[in-house]
Length: 116
Image (cartoon, rainbow, N blue to C red; front, side):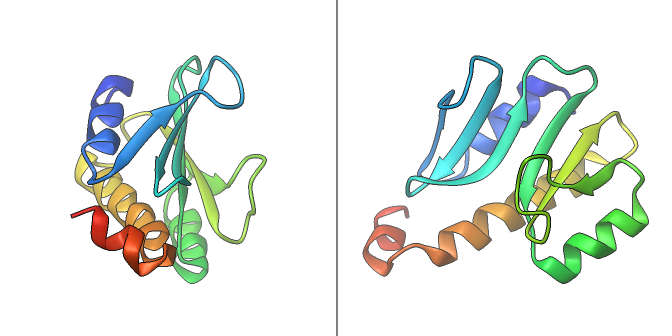
């Protein structure tokens, strides 16, 4: 997946928004005003940070050399993935969906209900 395909997949999640709140290179995706993905738009290969269940986060780090604890994030709950083609696109999409669902589940019910 290239950076534009990743961006399109993230923004297609119900209620997802994108912005550059920190600087001009870190693209942030939110749902209900909470971050579920961060993308470095200048790094080559691209990097993507995703929220993850803590146990699953450790498993992914052990399985893929391109998955490391979240850079400048809570390393228990976030992974940073170097998108160099070594992780299949279907896996990346599943990880994006997992991150999105974790964040969505933490939102107040009224907010969650408004996202459908």
